[in-house]
Image (tube, rainbow, N blue to C red; front, side):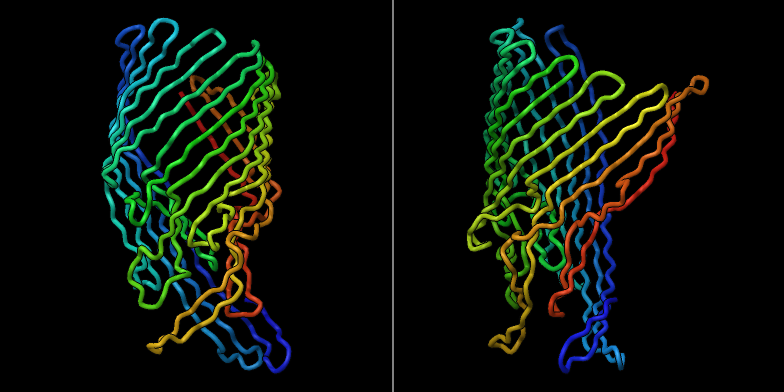
Length: 453
């Protein structure tokens, strides 16, 4: 609860906002693999796999405003939300590798996947906002050749041809890469490729409770097939002791999807008006420095990047930062081994992610006498959360007990208990709005014991 004091004739008020927010999510799967070396130059492996992703989200909130002197109820509102998302994949795949002389390494094969997706979005236990149950097959074949033109020059050319039942279309995905060794230690590289994603990520925009995302099968109706074109160039310096690598990349993105209720009109039944399609770019540079020798090893990486989306019907058609855009990201990882002991640490720093802040809420009386609430928002993803950083520490002691090998470990997640903001919630019935920071996991110790024989 929070006490609020206002000026003038308004009474002192006590605000109570009780929120129960629970997410149960995870992955599970099973696979079987068969492999055979038919010939010293010909190898095959077959794979049968099933995987499942689930995310069950429930939220119930009870908001009350009371007069602090009389305890009389001034405002009461109860809201509930439930989102259930299930993605299931069953895949049969065959991959082959053929070595032709010393110059050509050929890979070819194919696979077929049956995907099933369910997504249910309920409000206040009874209002179905979205209910989707989809299934579709996709089948692909591919061919790729790595040609060692010279000992210091390798060229890879290939492509994949896919058919997707959900749209009835075929998709060609060419790709190429080039690697040139300038010296024994210095190498430059470049790559290009087209890619498609048929199980599409949809951003569920929620400016008051934090945006989430869910997965649907692309159908070129509600959700388009997501496509991207990648360009990468880079260089590396590597010895037995050190590695320094730098890459610059650019990706063009099409078929992006967002779902939003903030433009919904009273009585609207066409869910297609709640989906928005757009495009985007992702570009940046990645740097890696690694120490590979001695008892003390580790690496440091830094990424400078920009991810920007453009939707004709959002933000007045102007580009805006994507939800996962982080300008700077720095990772420091180290490990020290001494006898039976191994100690390690990881420190992560990242620019805060963007979010859209609501500015006010108002109601309009429509011609039929009903009222519709509207939320006025600022620039889309125009603000950023505080920077994210944390330190993880761990120590392992390895020993033998007869024929058994043991490992006792202690890890400290977020060792200095940094309060990192996951997303922000806004209560608009108060002026100025009440803002609640929902945080990631704080300091968390973990003790593990493992035996092998």
